[in-house]
Amino acid sequence: GPRGHGTRPVRTVTAAALYALEHVEQRSAFLSICKILLSSKRVGFTVGLNWDIEEKARMACNWLGWAAMALVAAVDAQNSSYTIGAWIPGSPATMLSTMRPLLEGFLNEEVGQKLSPPVQFNLVPVDYTADSSSHTLISEGKLDFLYTLAGGISCAVIENGWAVIATRRVRIGDKESGADGSIVYSLKSNTHIQNISDLMSKRIGMGFILSATSYQSGFQLLAESSVHVLKDLDQFVFYGNDFERQFQDVMAGKIDAGFVSSTWIAENHPDKLDQLIIHRQLHPSYENEEFAFPTSTPLLPQYGLTVSPRISWQIKRAVAKALQDLSGSHPAAVTAHVAGFTGPGSYMGVRATQRTMKILTMDSRGVSRCVHEGPLAWGVNCG
Picture 1: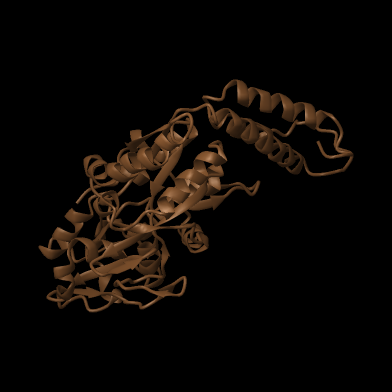
Picture 2: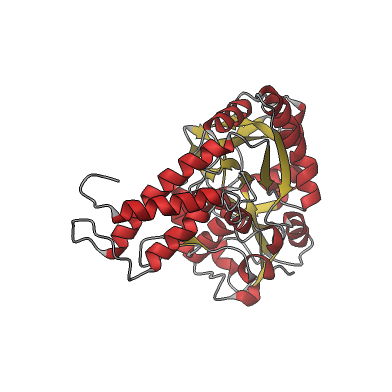
């Protein structure tokens, strides 16, 4: 440990790091130890300075994190198989048919078979049910990579120390972007709704609650217009992963308006855009690039791929390079609706929205946490 900080914290951290290594299959073992340290009011560290007990414990956790993760990454070099969790709108079957050629086939060919010894990438659906919660699977050490929208990535980074290594660029027709937002829309033929303030007491459909673009940004926009999702539940219909059903219900007049990710309608129903009112339509730019699609909210990064801190730098670099070298004309990219990948985007806007909505909270010890599975995410899915 650092000079002058005594020996007892060092002994504690060393023992905890060894425990984490002995239970390396429990990938978040050291986090559990940190929670114990941070919650204890009787941890008697002697550090030579009259620091607050939480600060001492936090310092020990930092030492533990560096020590355990560095050693776990070294152990990772022996792994031969990596699990990638992924979510896109629709069903698990839709996700697998869309993303498997890229996140399994392409990565196995361009990365897995070129390493010595070879490794295998396996794709699994996440966040379609409570049983497939990415948060739970990460905590249990069952995921190595996660491909999802900005909201889920933000939480994996903040809570688990994961790192974003690639951001998707989407191509729709001859237009593309590395950003996304929320689109609040209604039918032009519905003359009772001409602007957002007209949505008071109307039936509104919403997307996946854990998504920054299909729920969280739209929630914030409506709240700014005094339409409060959590106060006026009778007027809201939660569609979860089923963006298509939400859209069809708006078109059929079963609900008055909806909101989903900004690029979703342009990608799936471009011929219907001229029948819709896009409420508070913006024309923003993202990273010096004008956004080519309708949006009602500021822009956030597109889907990204994030990786566990225990994965070796060799694997991280190889995967990031393969994706960033991917041509949009590659068959796997075409199937996945991907124009290519860039490096990590900024998640400051995502976190600001999550804090406003209290999806991202901070406890009295300064530890940030996200609202995850349970009734909020999967129990509310009706219409």
